[in-house]
Figure 1 (cartoon, rainbow, N blue to C red):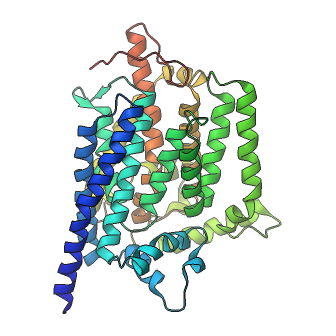
Figure 2: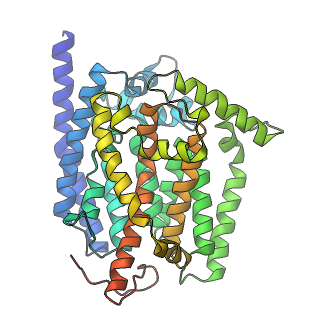
Figure 3: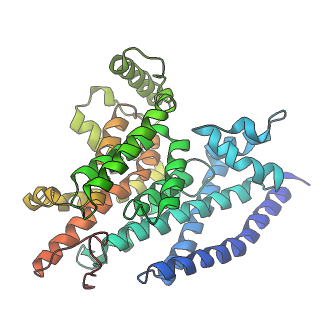
Length: 411
């Protein structure tokens, strides 16, 4: 069988996976609908096929461009390697997850791409739950655009979570954690699974996520007793202490005697290596505000790397317009009494952004990396705008973790 016919056969196999994934998705929807009466099966089904289209787009992109997905498919097939050999953190955990599908079930590259595309879609399902459960109020931006719909259908977010690699599962892990943290007592499994996924793929991101949760719980407006807050925070801190070696090993600091100095040295060398990878920007000479702006909102049209960069520039322009909506005096007043999940999201977003600016100097990598945290910024913006709208109606938005009362559904 020649290459073309073999590729066609593999694509056909991947397409035959869709009905099975669709039926499994409908079962998941049914279970979620029982828990959340706001859950829109119709909207999620539209999002399902929308995300699959980006899976096809990324697959096409991977044929003509360098993609880590090829590495994630080939490495688990190395001779002399057993499944347990790939158990670990970061890159190897993807190999560990992929191993039984590739070597046991005979999944082709195309089938693995489809499977991970579906995993990325589940991240959007839990992102929808995270937003909608906390903010039942509909908010429109740019006069007629529903904000939640806009957020869920941003193309760059789908593109980088629709392939074999780290992007899809870590996005799912982050959104599972965000969804579960609202009611950790009744969503313990979601919290554990989300935490394990994030820690396994990016231990340093889990450190930031856990830190954000601790700060949010200790400072956020919540009906949760201080006894339970303290117990939760102590459990998180204890867990971080137990896995500190794995986290520090990510930046080669597990044996360091000077964490700050060695971290600066690591970030400098890392930034230089990424700068040489193409699409580089000389962030070494940037001030901190310029670095942060670059990470959040570039590329823009003047420095867009190719057609993909132009598309991303349009989306970055939307990011800027949404970000400008919180440039109000009321926002800082809002933060003082904001609930746990808002403060957690803001801390997670700002801390990750700050850390990334010292490492990233390649626009292509920036585009990919920031997709995993932008939803935390969107959540803060969405919650603030909903709160402002409710106040204009003489009401006050309450997180559903604090009250069973529902907000009126306003256009």
